[in-house]
Length: 455
Image 1 (cartoon, rainbow, N blue to C red):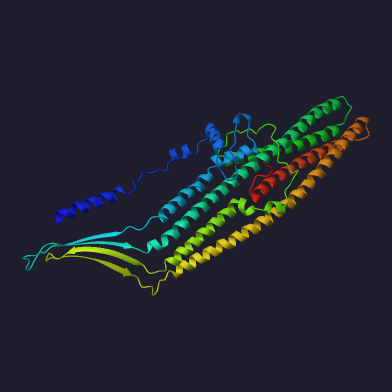
Image 2 (cartoon, rainbow, N blue to C red):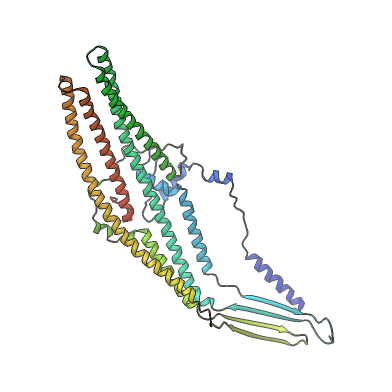
């Protein structure tokens, strides 16, 4: 029997070794970090952008040579944003948990051997025992655990897609801000260049005695004020450029020009609150993720309830004693649920399910409240833009009238350039309000869970 059993042990050992995973190191050193965080390959980005798969975002052809639009930036950020790497790693964890949930516990194999070493050993043989034991209760909970892990994996997938959507919309927001800052900068530089020419002309007039030093100081003061504003806009534009680079995963030194002729979002047909809320539970990825999470909690609770049944082990044995008597049999062991009836786990799962239930209701309520607030802000800011546009037109007329009065000697230089400064400030304020409208448009897309105005 000993000769027969040794090969059996060898075969068992080989099977166990073959089923084991192999460890492979993954170093976290400076070279690895530098390589991973290097500037993204633009050609690779274009290929991935044309093949992207996302519940909301659609594939897009991107040409960096023509500059990037807000929609381009949204797609690029999903592909290259460093923060999303860690989020996507959650998918691997959830899939591994799904794999683990479907694995049944291994049976327990036992072997024992007794050697006669003293006393009356005549006619005795070496005794041995073989045993095979397995927990039958795992069959009761396996289905529920697999359902819970599968729903959790779907929930994590939707949560990651929601994070990608948030990052994409953030990239769009910063592109719009950069666009309007460039518009402000263009207005400021044009105004500054005109004032510098005026200042040179006034200086000549002062030298010729046609104007006074007070007139020169008035022009110079207005020029300095506008120059300070231009410097402030340049600073904000650089900050926005760096922020956009960070979201897109590009190094600070990379320059990504905006697409020429890019249009800001339109507000001709702003949807109503009722229109946005209709079907929002099927569009908002975070709400869908919570639903799948709730389904996972339901399955976990079901598994916990099933796990309250006593633990049952079924085993089979084969043995030979020292007198060469061979026996075979089976065994059944049942744990007695006097103290632990899995009531703690059941209570935990019930509380977790209720927490997700309440969180889902709160998220829906918050979506309605946020949407109503954003729509109200859009209406208010849109009215301010309209008023600012009308005020700018009136100020332009006033500046032209003041200029004629200045040439005719009816208005002094200081009064004229005060009107010039008012018009400049109003034009910048109009652009800031339009930038705020673009921010609100992005916020409305986020809370509605879809790209607005897309056909």
